[in-house]
Image (cartoon, rainbow, N blue to C red; front, side):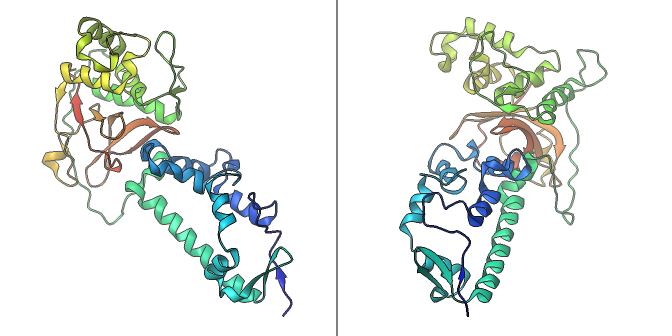
Length: 338
C-alpha cells in the first residue's frame, strides 16, 4: 500500500504551519478570539486554580503558538512515532523517512484517529459539565441542572426593609445591582485608581460587593474609609497608612469591616438541608481567605439541591456560579444590617 505522508507535520518547536498545526490552533489557541471555546479555556485555567503548580497548565496545554514553552520542549524530547503509534494504531504503522512522518496503514490509522478524537471530545465535554459543579458553563451563563434531581424548596427569609423606597427590598436591590456586573461581563482587571473607583466595565471581586451595596444606596467606601481612619490598627492590610484610593477594595479590609459591623452567620453549606440552607439568603456576603483572597455576594438564584449561587468577579470576567463550585474553605459569611 502506498505510503501516506501526514500533512506537513514536522518536529519543529512550532509544529509547522500545516493542517495539524491548524487543528491544534482550532482547539487550544487563543486565536479563537472571544467565542465560547476560548472563554472555556480562560475559565478553566483562571486564578481559581491559584498561583501554584496548576498555573503551569496554561503554559503546557493552551499556549497560543506552541513556541518555546514547555509543550514544545516536550515534543522535541518524545519519540513521535511511538507516541502517535500508541494513540492511533501500532507503532510500526508510523515511520520517519526523510524527516517526515509516514503511515504504512492509513485506513487503520484514520479509524484510530477518529476514535481518539471522539474519546478526547467526550472527555472535554465531561470536564465542561462536571468540573467543579459546572463552574465553566455557569460562568458562560449556561445554568444546567439534573432533570431527575429533586428540587429543594428553601424559604426566602431576607429582610423586607426598603430604605431607598424603590418598591424592592434592599437585599434584592443589592443582588440586582451586582447582577449588572454579570450581564455586562465586567472584565477582571486589578489596578490602582485615583479616587478609588474603577471604570464601570472593569473591576475585581471586591468591586462586586460595593457596587451591589450601592444599589441599596449604601456607600461602602465612605463607611470603610471612616472606620479605617478611626481604627487603623484593626486593619493589618492597611499597614498603618490609610489610602482611600484602594483600602475599601481589598478583601482583608472588607472582611475586618464586615466582622465589626454586620451579622456573622454559618460558613457551612449542606446541599438538600433546608434548615442549613435557609441561613443563606440573597444579599449575604461570603469571604474566602485560605489560599487566595476572594469575596462574593449570595444571589437570589438557587440550584435544585437548594444551594445558592454567588455573584463574583474572577478572571476573566464577572459571573454567577454555584457556591459549591468553590473548593476553598469559606472563611466568613456576613449579612448586612439593612
